[in-house]
Image 1 (cartoon, rainbow, N blue to C red):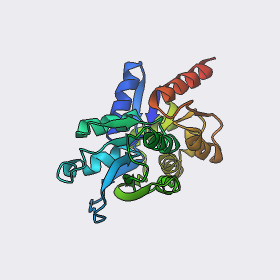
Image 2 (image 1 turned 180 degrees about the vertical axis):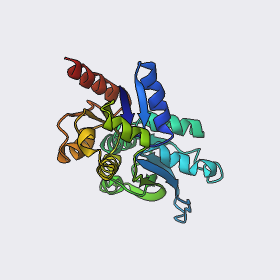
Image 3 (image 1 turned 90 degrees about the vertical axis):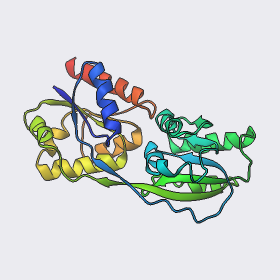
Length: 248
């Protein structure tokens, strides 16, 4: 029996490695494809800090960070995974939030209270093309000026790999891991198009958050579990709970 990981490449490889270390057999079906967007900063703003909600935003502009003079700025990352990507890219001053955009907003506001950045600082938000939350607007309401730069997009993948379709047909997939609302929707669309939707939704759907879980519930999945906190260790705990329940 296999665990299906729908997380995009290259992060899905680290997820697969962690699951195999836990004794799981893994299938990969990345449901979103990373595409960098050309970065042209024409704002001429004097930035006080950078905010980032995805490691992909950093990957997309990594070759330009030094020449743009951004590495000297403090960076606020949505969670530890994004923070690690920032450190790897060369950022020295990285503050880590609790894993979602609301926590990042609060961490930035705390940074202003702690004098890590000035209250009226202009923030550079390195963002994806599809935003689930108006983080810039929320920080703007708190007195910050936010310049949002789209650095990447995630394009839905419309088909499932053949080994995944075969796995569903043979009832050889034990659970599915979902990491975002958009990838969950892409998974549902692809499963429907491949004719495996019924078997795909008959097994546990383990989701990074309740927001992601709602997409699967609305689609009719009966075994949907959301992680207690929006991080992969909590998601793995959710997976283990789902598997124990199936064996009980």
